[in-house]
Length: 113
Length: 114
Image (cartoon, rainbow over all chains, first blue to last red):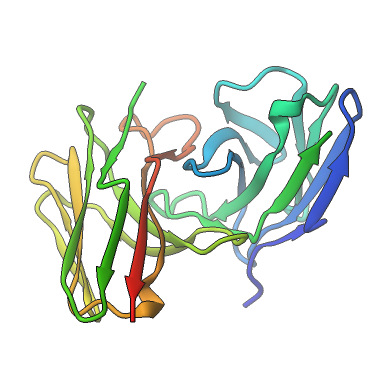
């Protein structure tokens, strides 16, 4: 069984740029959620994708957007990067009817200068 | 907004000691999950508790879900240096409908000294 994978592992961008992060879900899982984790904090929910559509969103502005593909993999796009976007971005996959248990990837560490 | 408060925020103890970490909320959760996270890595799911009053044991770790589904605790017996990490509790919204994005606590930073 293949776990959740994310790419890239680390990324450095400058303010105003755009970034795309990628996630492959665990085999058998059809739902992908994205989280932002600032240093020393718990993860914060960005949004969730199910059947290629956004299925709920946390308190993040529209410049955070995403996609889910037919193979259940997903992308997180962030436009007009700000310094405060520097964080660990986590992807989690789950089986829709699994009672909320989510399995996380190793994350992408984004630094915005 | 459903919030989860974890205590203590930091805990440093000697190897062999016992400890308990708490996760509390004023809101009801349909389930609660506990994760352990090491620096630079994603959270690893330890357990999901679903039924009020439920107790689950995972080797030296004992997890309890409060009767009212508003709180949970993690007890570690005879802590070992390998238990060091950030312990996070998290839960989906009670409604269950729509997005199942998890609400996380800020975590307990646990250090077990040899």
